[in-house]
Amino acid sequence: QVLLVESGGGLVQTGGSLRLSCAASGSIFSATAVGWYRQAPGKQRELVAIISRDRTTNYSDSAKGRFTISRDPAMHTWYLQMNSLESEDTSVYYCYARVGVGFKELDYWGRGTQVTVSS
Picture 1 (tube, helix red, strand yellow):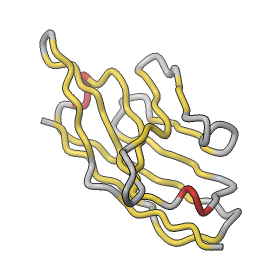
Picture 2 (tube, rainbow, N blue to C red; picture 1 turned 90 degrees about the horizontal axis):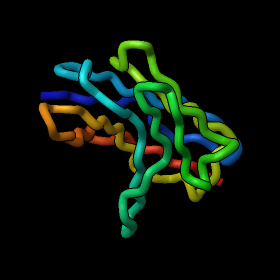
Picture 3 (spheres, rainbow, N blue to C red; picture 1 turned 90 degrees about the vertical axis):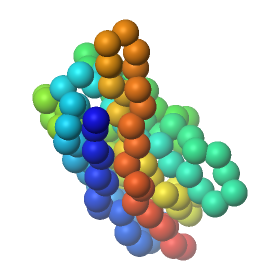
Picture 4 (cartoon, one colour; picture 1 turned 30 degrees about the vertical axis):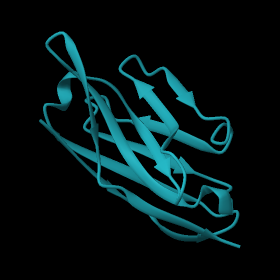
């Protein structure tokens, strides 16, 4: 079992920055990838950024060049540095972990943290 807890959301003006953190507990040592998704009202949850055990990263087109994902070596904590925020970035941001369990991979989610960008 893995528990994920986000922090760092809030209200910021257009062009500002925020840093989200995700703290993991439980069997996170077998995670193969961790990252961030977001979901705006009336929209589907979408990938923002993901980083694998070998530190390969993948970003959504909207996040490229503005957001940076990073993690600690043990994958207990990971971060999303968000710069040049736009109103379209307003969403609930969820941290995510893909964890290997035997021959399967399970997805774990945090409860989300609200990011609101005001113009």
